[in-house]
Image 1 (cartoon, rainbow, N blue to C red):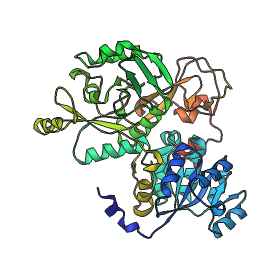
Image 2: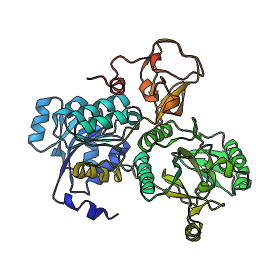
Image 3: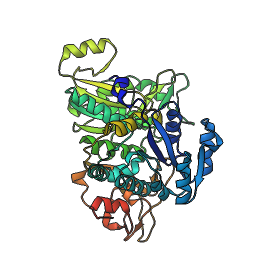
Image 4: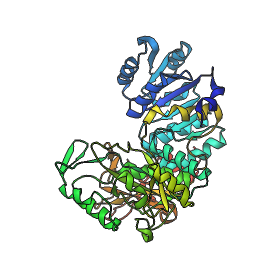
Length: 455
C-alpha cells in the first residue's frame, strides 16, 4: 500500500485535534510525531498535570506563548480565537473547543467513555487509546458514532489496532486465521553463558533453559517446563486480556481459553505452538486470540510487543518457497506465522487519525460486536460495601484475576473494567466471578451505554 497515494487528497488540509490524557507515554509519542506532519493542528490538550503538559510542549519546541491554560469556557473561547493551544485541567471544557478528532488516552475507563460519548454526540471523531473503556463499551460507542456520522476507531501503534489490521489484511487475501495474538509486554532474555534470565530489571537463574532451548516433539511438555523454570517472573498481565478483548470484539475471533495460554516461546516456534493440539500444538480450538511470552537471547531481535497471526498453508509448494526465504513455517508444513515485530505507540497513530478525518474510515473495526468479555474472578473473599480499586502500571484490580470468556459464556458477568472503582452491593466469595448485580452502578456512564439508556 502506497500511503502517499492513499492520502494524497489531504494535501493542504489541516484537522483540529484534541488529546485527553496528554501527559501519558502514548500521547507523548503522538505529539512528537505530529510535529513532523502538516496535517494536524493541536487544538486542545487535557490532563490533570497541566504543568507537565506545558513542559512537554516546550520540550517539543513550541514557543512559550503557543499554549494557554484555560480554567473556564470564556478562557477557552479566547484562546481559540487567538490561535493558541488550549490546555485544560477540566475534561468537561473539551466540549468548548472546536475539534475534528479527539484522541482519548486517559486510561480511566468511566472517564474515557464519557469523553468519547460527548465528543461523538457533537460530531467529533474519536480515536480510542484507553483500551479499558474500549473493551467494555467499544461496540456501543461504535454504533453511536455511526448514528452521528463520525468515526470511532482504535489507533494504529497500539497492539489491538495493529493486530486488527494484520487479521483483516490476511482475510482479504483469503487466509484462514488459526490464531492471532501478541507478545506480552516484556521479553524474557536468556544468557546462555550465565544461565540468567532478565525481565526488565529483574534477574533470575534458570540454567535448565539451555536444555529446553530447542523444541522437540513434546511441545506442551516443553512449554510447561519452561514456564516452571521461570515461575519467579510474571507470565500474565492484565492489559493483555483487555487488548485481546478489543481484538475479539473487532474480528470475531474468540479467546483460546479463559486464562489464555501464554507459552514461553521463541519467535521461530510460533507456527509450531499456536496450532491444534491434535497436530502437536496447544490449541483446543482455532480462530482464536492468544498471547505469548517472548523468549530470546540478548543478541536476538525482540518481538517489540508486536503482533502475529497463524495461518493455514493451503499450498505446500508456495510455503516451501517461503520457508527457504526464512519465513516461520511449522515443521509439519501446514501452518505459518506472519508477524509485525513492533508497535510504535503514537508514532504510528497519525495514519489512523488521517483515515478518520479525511476518509471517514476506521483503521480498526467499524463493525464491533460483543464477542468476548473480560471478567474478574475474586482471589479472596470480598465484603459488601468494599470498593474495587484499580491502579498500577498494569491496571490491576486488587484481589482479582482477569479472565477472557466468549460472550455466550459470560451472561450477567460484569466486564472487568466496568467493575473497577465500584462498590460491591453484596459479599463475593473467593473463586466467584463478579456479576453486574454485585456492583453499585449508580451514575456509571458505561453501564448506561451498555444498556442503551438515553443520557
